[in-house]
Length: 83
Image 1 (tube, rainbow, N blue to C red):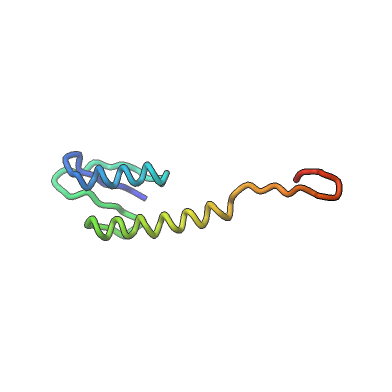
Image 2: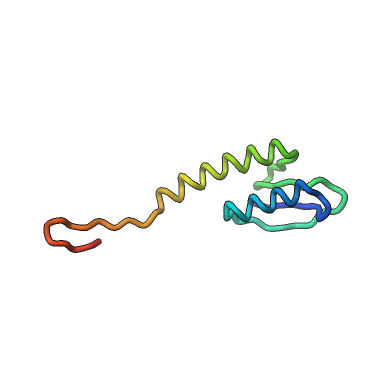
């Protein structure tokens, strides 16, 4: 994902904060004279409502993916061995 931002844009700061809190991999690119936006592959996501709806959905997907990849260890009750 590419995060394109205008340094003087409050929306850009909100997006940046959200990406950092969620630990979402992204590349920052400064754009002058435009409102901040996201680009996912060839899809441009513009406007605060659309951006945060996208980030909400992405966050849910990442939470689900992370839950599947969690480290698990099973203890064998018969002999006490772990994993």
